[in-house]
Length: 270
Image (tube, rainbow, N blue to C red; front, top):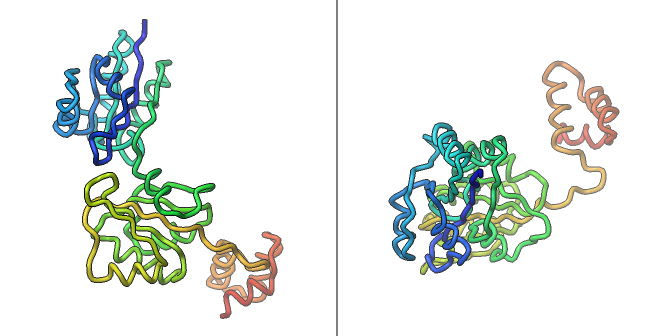
């Protein structure tokens, strides 16, 4: 009989946050695939779990996934853990889950700690529609694009050293945009600082936060009626750069997008 994969979220800081179901799954597993075996050993020792460990990280995912699938096809139960939180969420695991599904193996996902979910709730920002983007891009242009995208509240991981620069970019785009800097969640120095982009950019300008950080940014403000979209404006600018007259370019793009030619013209002349 074929085995299965059990995806086990682990504490993001406080070891007491591990669930009873996760502990049971770890004890029952034939092998535990861990992002860092030394790190996971601390959790296992705390709760008296003695299942064997194998490494499973970004540098050996392909080879290890194939090996683990073979073991599961022979009847083994494999528990997958990352260093903290839910595997696959900015952590290894995607390759293994896909391989299991492709091989017809059962994949069970247990609920548990998540830095992204905890930060979203603690931020006091809208949670009815939100998106998680993992770690924010380093390049300013790419970062500005992500911060400007519509789609609900934005949740992202960020290096503490980059928080001041990221907040400065956000403040330049929209100084009144609400944001929360969530630091060291579930740990003894947990802190959630809320405010506008300009307020928090000033707060952290000369002193980056310490520890692991999750940024939560309020949704982009709704576009005014008749205001052209960024893609349409960019299309007009590219046509102008190619030699078209502004009025002609605005008219052509407006016909293709259903927007206002006058609004597009103003957007590229202001």
